[in-house]
Length: 158
Image (cartoon, rainbow, N blue to C red; front, side):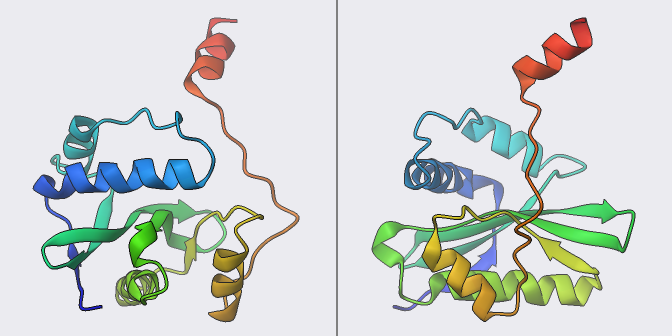
């Protein structure tokens, strides 16, 4: 498969949203996506963008993406958080995911960040095996914590 990797532009957010939705279905959370195309455009392409996205394109069709943003660790300094790496079902196994992953890690290295972080579902064996094969460490003793909007509002109200 021939593909190119590039930074996304505002007009790509329709396809980025499609990929986010496909990921939610893959992760068995088909109704979890609340963000809209307009949210992505506003958040990603404002004066202070909240994220960047690399997209993989094959014959003018976006078949994968890696959405990420910069964070700060009190232990090590600047880090990048990879929010989502997704390749369409039809394009999996073609090297597109590895190319997106490599492009992101090369970008992080150029920036001089101290760490790249992300989450992976424990049942996604293909992803777990791939990440471990690249030298990534999966922290089994850490737990991901979420405070959703409803819980946030309830906590603040009380």
